[in-house]
Length: 306
Ligand SMILES: Cc1ncc(COP(=O)(O)O)c(C=O)c1O
Image (cartoon, rainbow, N blue to C red):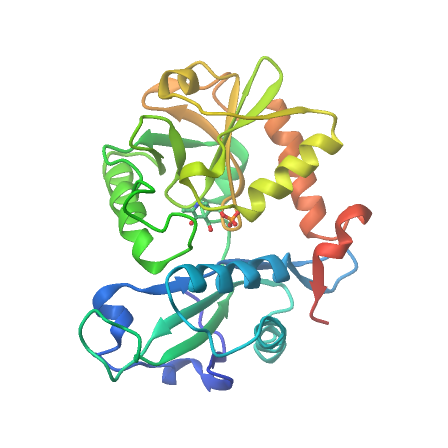
């Protein structure tokens, strides 16, 4: 990881190496915290802008509300903090932004009502999450042996720290088995989401993505659906079973970090022609045009930092 100069901690720009917490930080022990993953891109006019900043900060506040964390900052304050952090870190070539709402030191035991709520925001340079090669040639996906935590026992719509144990177990299993990423099914056997991204497939010219019944409400998924409609594609939200994926014409993942990553293989089955499909490529190009300010219609989603 490439260090930046500062990390924003509860309103203060703290030097990177001094951004530390106590061992008895509540979230470290019991996992109640909320995160975001937001990205800034260099734009075509040479400036830099955060994509869908407001949507990401709103989701951070929503996740916190779901998991009973009272965030001591407003949406506007957190938006301003992220802009200022990128400016002070001079990250004008683009950056990944990681806000974290966490419970601090002072209270032990599960009942967290009196534990102090803190917010930290880090930002740094981070390249393609699933690799540059993955963006071009596609990745290999393994369906995880563990199902996604069901709605009856989790806060699935929250981008909650605790939810990432499920994702982490699936990811580790997939990578150790020689794959790039894991796809989790829900407890009924329908596609939920990947360990850190959403799933799309193309069959007979239709673009299909599961409803968010058992996944994060993904900001990139919504963007890609808008772009697909602009391209005149038919978009369907319905449940998908694993065997249908194996015979898809194309498949890809979407996420702030994953962007639009083609899938070339799932569980030893080659998907389509085994590379980046034609529709996937069009949507990938449309996505990169959008985040870099080349698509007039969506400039409204860019917050310029310089
Ligand atoms: C579990 C999970 N699902 C989906 C996504 C995609 O969400 P978004 O497009 O809002 O980044 C992410 C990434 O944040 C994720 O971690």
